[in-house]
Length: 119
Image (cartoon, rainbow, N blue to C red; front, side, top):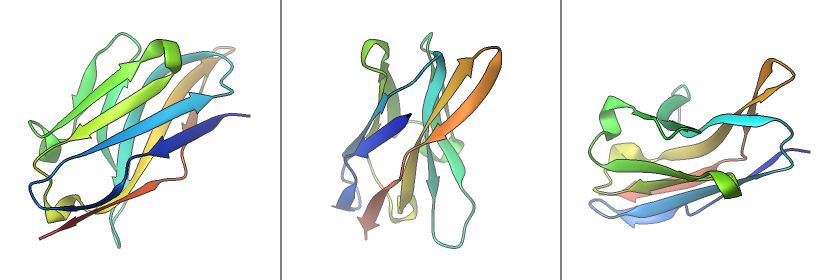
């Protein structure tokens, strides 16, 4: 059974930093990419950052220059370093893993971790 275990969320003041971690286990197949999405109250879930197994990363415009995604392929773990946090970053952050198995792709999600940025 695939599990994505997230950690690192919490409460921080504006301008502060947090580091999220997500460890994937029980995966059968190849992990194509891992990433982070977030959902603020009353809004749709949106992409924050993704990183492929080859190390190519992609960021939402709103976090470019402030957030950095990294990955440890050997541990199937992805990290999100968040600096210069703003109140508008407040959301539940979800870890995602895209897995290729038997020529098909599957999406797996973590349970979410709350990030709250106070002004």
